[in-house]
Length: 119
Image 1 (cartoon, rainbow, N blue to C red):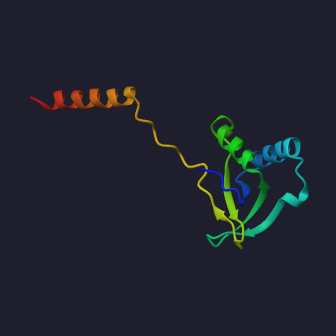
Image 2 (image 1 turned 180 degrees about the vertical axis):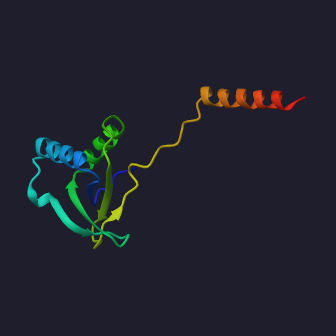
Image 3 (image 1 turned 45 degrees about the horizontal axis):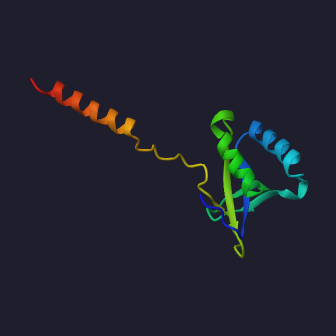
């Protein structure tokens, strides 16, 4: 998803392991401080979340490493002038690309089903 230049980004870890890794990495790469942690921040979905304010590049890095390290987190964005943050669908699964290999396998499967259906 494209970065919005006038937005703030927040990350809400869903488990303790993700929280530890996020905080350690933020301290190492961004010089994270206590003022980046926001408790019970309101969201447009009506809930409140404990979040960490992070740069866009950090969220992109987390998303790239999600599968390898099994991080569990929510991402939020707050646009300039908005009073509440909103869920940001950054970590939604991507669509499978329609490569020649995938299309060929689908065609072969269809042909096999048709041959089995004929008496």
